[in-house]
Length: 57
Ligand SMILES: [Zn+2]
Image 1: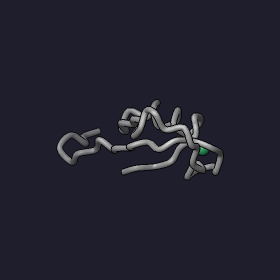
Image 2 (image 1 turned 135 degrees about the vertical axis):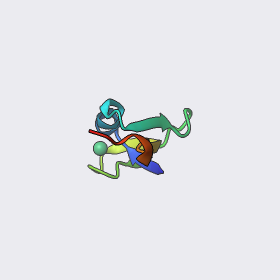
Image 3 (image 1 turned 180 degrees about the vertical axis):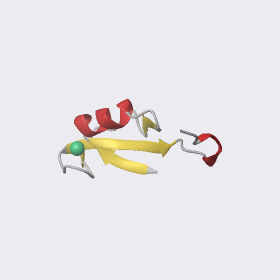
Image 4 (image 1 turned 45 degrees about the vertical axis):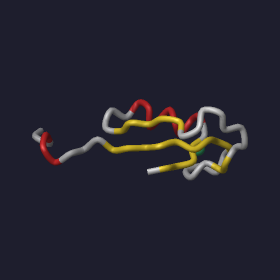
């Protein structure tokens, strides 16, 4: 899903191994309010990689 994230919140997602995150538009210059903290950030495509197949802990 597409989320607007500032650098700090994007970092949190980047460190989360269950999530793939990438910039939607590398050339985006206008900052959007971060969906988490409302700070200025960019649009990211955030995908959770939890497929029911391998959830055995
Ligand atoms: Zn944020």
